[in-house]
Amino acid sequence: MTSIKITEDTTEIAAFTDINRDVDRSFIAFAIKLVVVAALIISILGSVMFCTTHFAMAKTASTVPKQPNAQVQNTQKPTETPTEKQRIVLLDAGHGGFDPGTAGKWTGIYESEINLQITNELKAQLEAKGYVVLMTRTDANALGAGKNDDMMAREAMIQWSGADIFISIHQNAFENESTCGAEVYYNQVKPESVKLAECIERALQNIEGASPTRGVKQFGHQLTKFMRYSVLIECGFLTNQKEEAQLTNPEYQKKLAAAIVLGVDEFYDTAFQSE
Ligand SMILES: [Zn+2]
Image (cartoon, rainbow, N blue to C red; front, top):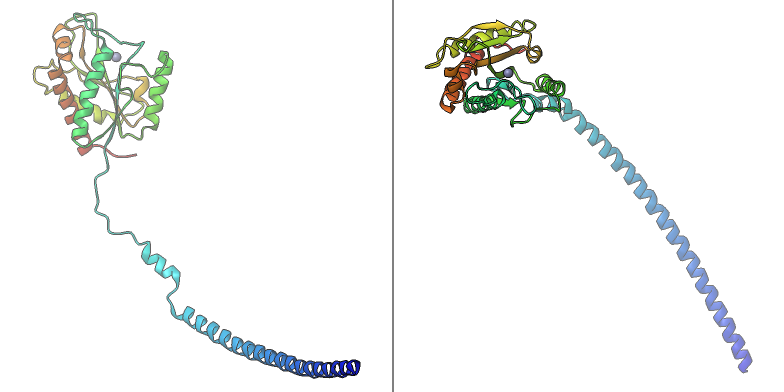
């Protein structure tokens, strides 16, 4: 009994299980159909939506102004107020270091030191008037170990400075003590420089208490052949007692620098043309 019961129970259980399996299978089949139908509907709707969206995008693209037009508007330059070009001057204090130049006959002060004093004063006065001022040297040292290296370094600065004009400052010497007066040199290979030389020489004529100037002269100096507007100023003679006293005097150095600035101003206002 117990065994039959067990069998019956087993059969019943088996039968119940079969019924469940049938229910499961039909449910699964239904579910699969549902999923397939749903997928089909989603797919159709998706296609419709894609087409709609794509069409809408295409329509949008055809109605929005093209980007290049917008870029043209954006790259239009704002109205610029014309401003005067920055004036850039390269100053050269002659000699330095191992090369002191000439010396004051009575004071013994070296030309290289006076050159730097006057160049520093000239720099300050030009900057006060808005000039951009560059210097080949700013201290007592030379720019190289020997004369050749020193000159090559100065040449390189002249060629790469981007300055408009070049002014080299020197002091003169001569065996005759009575010889005096400033001179302004330009190089014949840069004939446009004569205009700058003339402007500065005219201004030097008007320094209070100065000896008469000796004029504008040509000289093929090594450093005045690179820039379109290049001059070398011999401010006076350290072998003349009066001029040596003047050239070593800070007040006279200020007057000298002021005169050179006036000459540079006049040159820019009347004759300067960028290359
Ligand atoms: Zn010199």
